[in-house]
Length: 393
Ligand code: APR
Ligand code: PHB
Image (spheres, rainbow, N blue to C red):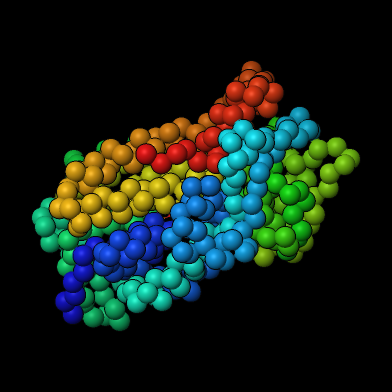
């Protein structure tokens, strides 16, 4: 079957769905082509922290009803080291900004509901997805549904298909430059039916490795432990995970880690990655297709939303005024923010994790950095303004 739309979008993650939503609000038609099922993308456990700007955008564009009702607004975070907690007053240091805990798959569900209610076309369970002819004015997305070949012709393609997608590898050799760093550790994450042990997130530096206390709701806790990159979950029965979390998050007699049934367990690799430029001809890359950050700064989802905000504005300017200038500058505008967020995510990761090749000097230096960070207003403010989200250009 041959189909036609204005913007063909590969991938129904936060980037692809939000782009489709923003384009719709600007009167631009799009079709989203996704490899997985609707159920799979709506249930996949991913990140869960939204910057102030991401929350504002979701609310302003009419997809914030459940977010307003169910999201948990946080005014601060805690850094824990040497057995003591130190609060960073995010709101106080940023003139009132906050972050919100709301699972990524809930954002996905809200966006899918809104798109389908507006009559949008989202093609789920597309096989053999490929992109073609983006060196010219009529690029195409080809895919199979139950064995039948479909071809979607468009004016532009948005590659929102994540780190392992097909769009980035489709760009001819020599056009893109990749920058990356793989960290010598990973995160073992659990979701547990346990009341959060603190109202705010706790980032803990410990000689046995990093630990993070987060949450999803008043009854569900999300916890992470620094582990080996090739960690075998088979070696981590639930009891051992809880014991290790308890050790790393310990903070005197007044604090207790609430335990509960573990309902999900997984290992997340840690990587920093950027591709430059984020475009080639009429193909534009957004979100994880163009960059990956380690999860320590909680930026992956927010950066994906920031990209498509820029792309939607550029496409709107093109369709409304015939102006291609913003499209030409898409990469340049996004990358300025991307690199600042890369720096922040790398810095949080380097400060809070144990590295196998570090010595006692490095540990003392990390502790001094944490001490400085939590005792200097200037340093705390630097953390806070990055954590709640840098302004959009
Ligand atoms: N064809 C069609 N769809 C594809 C293909 C393909 N060949 N390959 C991948 N996809 C889909 C995936 O199934 C997924 O639904 O593209 C979507 C990409 O979504 P994400 O990986 O969530 O990427 P993005 O939208 O950029 O959002 C980034 O996701 O990984 C987290 O931490 C990351 O929070 C960040 C966010
Ligand atoms: C999460 O809740 O999953 C989460 C929170 C903060 C992070 C990373 C993950 O930095």
